[in-house]
Image (cartoon, rainbow, N blue to C red; front, side):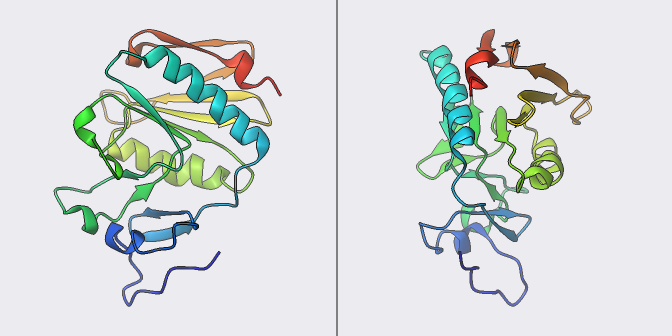
Length: 193
């Protein structure tokens, strides 16, 4: 996977991102380009599909919608034009309850819930950079799925604008999600592998 053409100031914007080859997947965090790892593993995909299916089925007819990667989430710093946004990520799953944030390009603004499925290559990004990014952007719940340990860590945004201590769930658990209208996610089929 090649790197986008270097910019004189080393910072990229969504306008640059839109010019890159479709077959390559990138994320921008504060103008810095990060190549997505090669195609996710089979286990990663199975977990993503199992979670997405449960979210989808329980959200039908409700105002919230679930989307799977690749799905661009643009996180503006303020009121800049789309092409000037310097942060664009592709969480494994997002749930968006405010339809005004959705357009043909994806989501502009913080989703209500973001899910990252950790791989050995993405752990640092998911647990440090994206944690801080989602917290600052105002994502209400951040789920970090760890396939090897078969656990889900759920961080909820507090009134202080910070993620608190995570709730940790394992394969035997069912997770109630009051944020989305009292839906429940069963982790048994998520970690069926």
